[in-house]
Length: 165
Image (cartoon, rainbow, N blue to C red; front, side):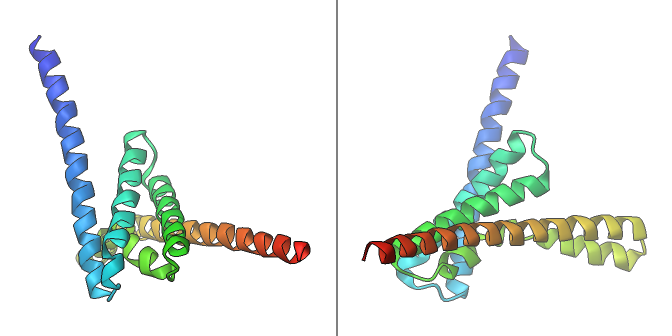
């Protein structure tokens, strides 16, 4: 009976911790959006994109995905929402995308590279260097893929319109 209660309590705490992280991501992206001079009317939306991307990342980790795949899928989601908002609000996609990828940028990995380099641990330096490059590469590839999808869709739409004219 006590074990069941502890297990249920632990599950509730994990959900609460996930919610706190998503809210934290929202406010971190909001602050970054202000620093990057995102127009006031788009501050909420760029923050929403960042929080949504972080939620996708946390859900991917919860399903057992490795960190790089989680970052890839989260960045795909952030890029998809960013492109959708850009078309919806007739604004540049970078207004939403640049602040939104903030939670996924491997800042702690870069810190650890320098830290282990300073203390002279080559194995850990190499490990974190490799991991940081993989994460940065996944971010870049996800953005490229979503950009390509939207560009192809745009070209297809224009081609159909010009054919019908």
